[in-house]
Length: 503
Image (cartoon, rainbow, N blue to C red; front, top):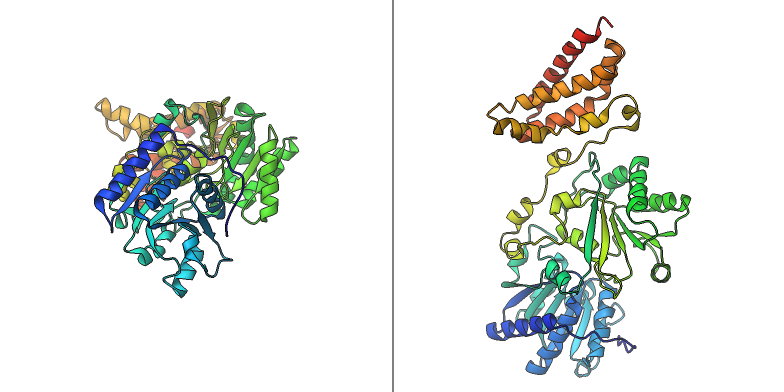
């Protein structure tokens, strides 16, 4: 498949030219059987850089280059850039069963699954390959191709040098990591738009972690599909981004469809897009999004890579993720620079900023490459930490009955450490927590039985607080937690009986 089409060739910026020289020098210095990994943030121009590397490598060595991608959009984008800098290339897609005259091409772009099928049938399907370039190299699926090119150099390119499979780290296959410009550096030099971040605390109770290490789609749909979360999303949009071109990322199709329905009822221009759509429908929706000034696009999993729409003004993360790679991919969709766009807005509805830090923050990618498990563990909360990291959301009905604002000002974790700093016992924090619950109930209850009803309605909040305490003291066995819950409630009932029973 040849792709001859008009295309505005992207020229190298100074930092990109320097990167090309550094990588080519590293490959030349280390010779064959040397694999190199290159990190550069989304929007930094990875395609432009590795296309120039391919051209220079072909000219210097006379060997051919193979570029691996996992999405057809990335293949087409790369082929256009290569044609623009006069590299005669061919896309190997599912329609290509054989290549009659391999002398016609110096570079091939192939989808990983398609090429693997061809190589299984004929390991010499592509001949004379001296360099294999892997786009989005963090995906583990590319490994199956490496065995066919043991005598070639491999150059992996990614924004986040962390394997999609923690059991198969990237340092198994790459000898060295070269770290490119940081996000903050690219912002300061005017290559990327800066992110103005808005965070909204959400209750992630109910999310479950799947076998891939991220939150499951089903549990995410359950959490984000409910009325309360839809209202919070709408509120955030109207407070921060109303009238702006907005891209919303969801975990599941059910949630995204509900988002579309919610926003349509309010009269907003919105469309839903997911991987089940045909190529034509997808193209039509993306064209609508591009040309509609205040368009909102709610999507699922399809626009994190291979999608480039610089006019996006706001990114909404209407989901939680434990993947640092996905976190950066989603936010990066808003970072493209335009003459009249120096910044974009980021609305986080998944406590992701709390989990990973701000998008612009410095990350030690060398540490991530050498010690991926340690790097990830320092950033991720395990399943039993979920409630520890989030703010508690009171039901609306309860807010009408008691002063929930007073309870929200009490942070048991902070009080615990304040007690320790003052030379008191950590257990004193539990006593202070109990007193805060007592005062709020006493203030609102008409009599003892009404107080008991309010106490029952507050059980989830009490549980939330005490889980924070057991996490602080690293003593969270089921038996201990049951004991402390029973003691807490018994003492609260006793205090309430003393002041309310005669009222």
